Figure 1 (cartoon, rainbow, N blue to C red):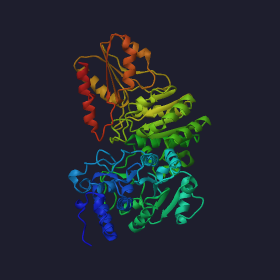
Figure 2: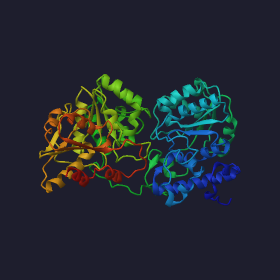
Figure 3: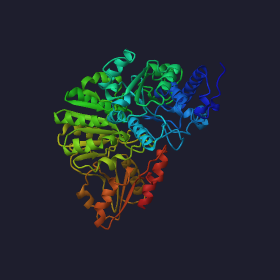
Figure 4: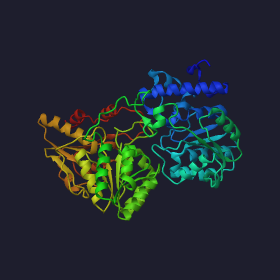
Length: 586
């Protein structure tokens, strides 16, 4: 069969004219285009390669955009974007950055939500279906959710409500037997039994919840998918379509190592080897590796210490080998941050010392658990926050710079901001030793650094700021990552004969009044943090100093959903480069 001109696919209407054989040819060419782009650009590899046929079948059968499709997480929607008017962003290197990695209503009417977090699609789609019923509409509403996302509590809540609609509501469960890493949770035994019995096994979770149930064993076969979707189109009752797919299909390396290729930087498409592989080192090269090594050492020394993740072990530096070595002391609850925080609370209550590693933008889903089950109950669990910075992920769905304002204002919860490797290690070790408070440790952003000027404490429970240098009438207070830039600004000013007091606050949740009182007769205080200004650390300082004549300048980030920004450019826009800080001081 002749090749299909991918540039001729402008909308789903173009694929609905095709035969099954033409669709199969299209799927093959789309997969090749995806591999070409991902191998040089990076992105979510496995989720998208595994969903090519399912996405084509959905748009082939359902009358999108009148029929509504909500993709959970939406990290598997590159094929969806390709056939909804955005093909050039996947075939022309000059346009690779034209689209985001997730659905985005600003890009297309086929994208209903900006989604980058898991488990919400079913509840969102249930709301769309209910609105349709109230308005007397007839369109189909389809939620597409992966098996890994089913571990999230809101997925169960959405399924629970969706089953009560009594009208057209279709849930497609993409079962590729993987979350980011392997799945964890009791539901996966049920899914495995359904796969092994071609969908006939009882009990069946979905039927038990009130859904009609259909199963497609070959979830990458276009004919099977099209026939199944046609059979449930316009269904008068809620129905679950369970499809068994291959994550990473079409790329041998991704099929073999599904965890490594969930998301990948540029790689060799023949071998799968990363193009920018870092040489092995006896010393940790980043905070994930440092954290993993520290936790492994502490867990070996004390069997009453445990490491927890909510489905993102790679972020913590825990590859499969480390997970096996840690055994029962490594706990993966699946993609369920709320449960992870409460499991940590239970462990702490029982005398175990839990340390949960979490991505900053994911921890916001567990705010209530941090407030009620950790802080209110004063449970001494430790939470290490990764990518809590402008130097982490930069998609609007994965922003990491809201955490200071979010968590540092909860009573009884200690929020620590280490500035360097030595301070991070000391805070982590102390937090596991102590038994008085829940502790947040915000991993510094950017490259791992060492700093000999930082004073290391035996106890971080009290808000005692580190006066690193004592100068004259200008004070620079740099929180966490931003301390390094404040230190460089101080160096610039001191070369000009301006004596500077340089302070590392360490603690962002409680002010050190004694230290701040020493600054009351200064002419100027500048604070800097790589979090939003509103509700952040600097505003606490400014409020405290309000009765004094000293001027306070707060540097930080805007309260906005920034998208695909350059961290360096943002740093400059916010006036936080060392020379800019020095200029403000002058």
